[in-house]
Image (cartoon, rainbow, N blue to C red):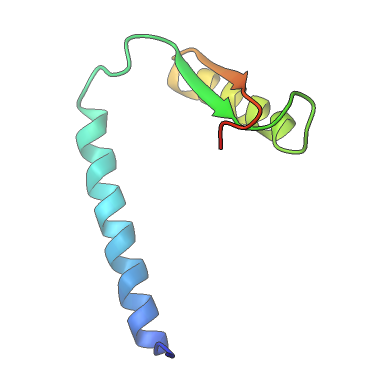
Length: 76
């Protein structure tokens, strides 16, 4: 079953609009009030651990909210 290019573009546009509306409603809230945990389903030091920690640090700096990474092997 093939999908046309226009169909994919319309789905992409709809997804972007839906996520942008969701983001605007989230900006109006003072959530989260507690630190945010990012669960990485692999052991520490893996290929997803380092980028996850970098992203958590940047999110903390940008949003002024504490983000931390928790490694749980097999959590995926």
